[in-house]
Length: 345
Ligand code: DAH
Image (tube, rainbow, N blue to C red; front, side, top):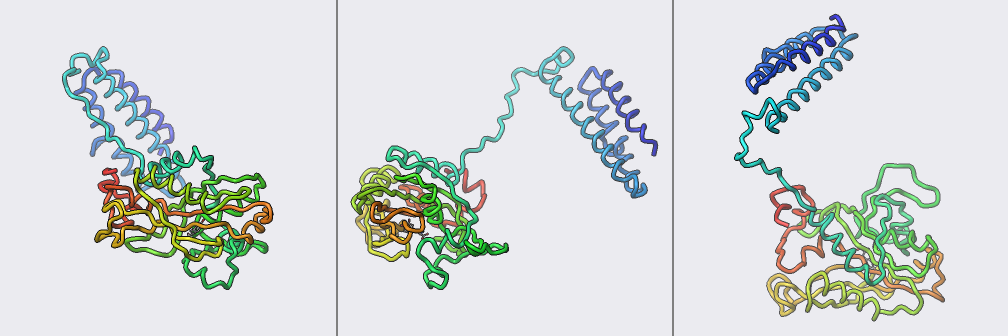
């Protein structure tokens, strides 16, 4: 096919376009070029039969021409409705406008995370983000969890197919935001008040777990910090996030990277701690916390004789689900992009 044919067609179209003086003309023009039996449909028919050498070039030019025609037609169409000179007679001022569909911020990825960040800000905790795909060293080993330690099974790790790093080991999808602890310490800027919020991954899925979820990790390193400081921060957070009157409780637990370690419960929002079918005894478990283990401080090049610290790591989805009045009974809803569900929040 003669290549200049596209240019000629484009010119011809522009000439035709100038002659349009009504919406009916515009429609006839659209049918002439873009209709089922129109000029472009013919060219698309030709396209199927031409030799492969010129197909690419032909296809590109044809698409360009089509896009150009479509955008010129739609420009003119909006001019008619904007009440410009030629369109003034067709412009109906009293027609209600079409409302565009309006979205809103995602309940977890934006709303909950922003709220958490704002709550911790006045306490001096600054939001940071550490890698979502990280070396085994930062995810486990530097956190006092040697390679063979059975506790590592609990993290149900996703391994990434990548060459091992001699120093840092395998590449993993970060199974928790605790991976940011030693990275933060290695920045060598003490004291630390870190709030690491990031996506994490674990091979688990049920009503209480989704394989990709968010955690927020608080880490404070300073001189003379105590469990009382940790409690103070957690209570403050619980009251701000869940509402006044909600309490936290620390239960002794075991994590390799904190000593002592706790699991943190928050008083149930449904029965205000009295005990109900959902919580049984008035408390709901929400995440881990503890005083940073000296070995973790050492891995972060922080001297445990001078400094100590506390840390906590909670799931954003789980925490959000405990907000009073939400009644989300399956975490998987929060990981799906189902607009019907999401638009409620
Ligand atoms: N990283 C732990 C997890 O994912 C949670 C955790 C426990 C974080 C104790 C902490 C902590 O900072 O001190 O299950």
